[in-house]
Image (cartoon, rainbow, N blue to C red):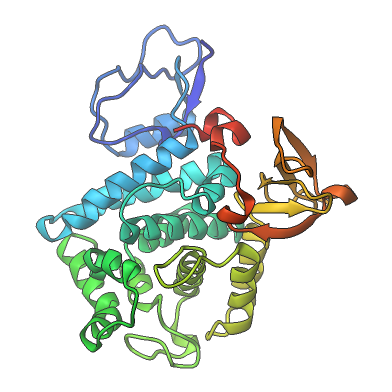
Length: 365
């Protein structure tokens, strides 16, 4: 089997290493042995920077995202009982950022195809962090800043993580007590994170301010625009977008073009133009994972973010005659007959496929 370079996203701290790791493809002996328990630190960072190699392939992007979400769930649920969660949360944030960098299209598609398993309250934080990480990297933020803003997105709702699933399945309006909890959760979250050993003031401020609006209508403190960090605004934007595209008991999810349009039309901030522009560029109206019907009547799924000419790669799975294609057909929207006519909900598309069929082994579970 070919030697593969390993990244931080391929490693799971606290669990036995799955392979021998070598400092070079032809190194005679490993620097880390299979079964060894990993811990973050400067030595490992140096090895990763210089190159670590394994003789087995790393887990897929989709598998990594699900493993990270499971670790996040365990960390957040047990946060009250921890005094040193900072290291674990930073490790998850760093690995998620590296995983998104490995294949942003698969990471985004997992959101829209509901491929990240677990309770909504935790999954929503992971999905928001995927979007935040992608946009922060595109904005040219430094690696340390990307790490902190991603960690803040992962922990933004820790103040109500146990109640989020109840709110998600609620058919009616929240009670006054529940509304008060929602408005308090940024403060509660900051207190919990401090208790659990998080001392980074920027991280804590992003958690505190991610529901604030430029006009002072946000919560918990009613801050004005110049008092709200750009990274807090980025988290707030991603939080709202991911909530739009998630289904509720009382409403369907918004289709991606509708969700993006609503952000631009209804968001209360107003937003820093650079944040909104990068968000629109990286996510777009038809992000990977969007189910679509094209002009000739065929249906399929968007595979990638826009090419340099603005066209999108599609994978058609059902022909214009309504029959399932024997083999998926890949095409570009720049061809007139394959131009996108509309985005579809799952029940409209009537497609049955796995992400691996469309994106290959990096999207296997």
